Length: 286
Length: 140
Image (tube, rainbow over all chains, first blue to last red; front, side, top):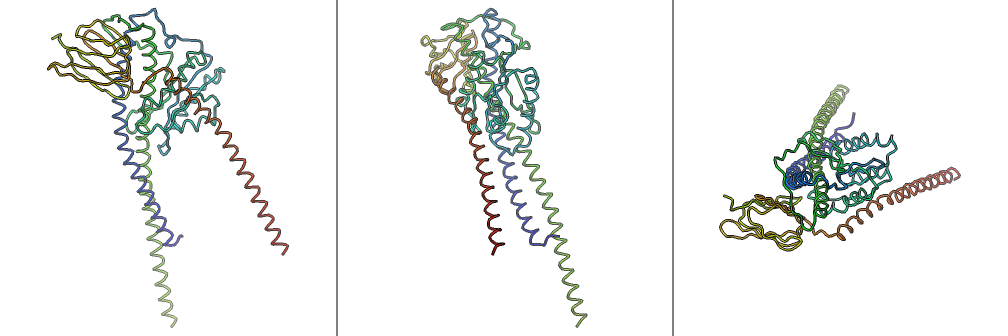
């Protein structure tokens, strides 16, 4: 059994760790709230664009933007959104597992895969595995700006327009609630037609300067906003996952301290007993 | 009550403005447009500039946008504002730097291998040294 002093140092070190995890939990909780606000703030933009695109698609069934046409799949692209930092439970590994599950059928049928990563963790993970890393963005911080994503998204959109990839997927975590985050893979382009939207009447717009330019700009912004939303949502997920992980760590540290305290008390008691019996037997010998 | 038109200004990052207006002026790509209620549906791009919103009391509000899209329906105006200055060459530069970062990442792999190699060599050298030392001690 370890001596009393050893156990005491161990208890102090576990207590220090607990202080850190406790602080990280609180920081994550407040950051999560902010990230959720940001998530909510980003929503109207994408919704508005989606409405406009739905109107346009109905008003101009004859005009088909490349982003709307299904092609034979010879190569696919993924935009993978991960966190920059660790200590957030299984968030990233669950996401990467979902990506692999999604890639599997493509791998088996010999379809090439191009990647674009956002966030440090995905970059470090996927550069070890696949060579087809086309673009990268990381260290976006807690309040990412759309500006920092434009380039990364454009690389993939250009690749699509040049026929280098025939399908583009967005991989990110979806914030269900504080306890649950779900890894999700969705198809970005070609745009999946949204049949659920019910618009009672359609009208045609006047376009300035012409419809093509307007539609191009609109679709590009739409996709950027989807990616941006994914990034913001992923931050909310990261903070929630970190909060939960840190809470578990603090609880575990508490349990460990209790155990150590018990061991310490036992060791102390044993030492006292031993001392007493030594004194008694010493006295008896005299 | 058709004398006002609803206007929403949103950017990808936040909702900027929402309210009723009697008249709106916006810097469209082909020149500034003034939009009164019951305007015909129109969609255009915006240049950097300010959107002026006249509210009921005759007050005027001005909101700067660095470009974006303007969508007009008879009762609703939607401004999809850009958060950053957008131009073809700026976008291009951003794309190129994103690509470069990716290439850098892939090149780092090589340097990491170099580190591993160096570490292995270092370990080997250390082992040799300690073996030599042991030999010396035993000879003494």
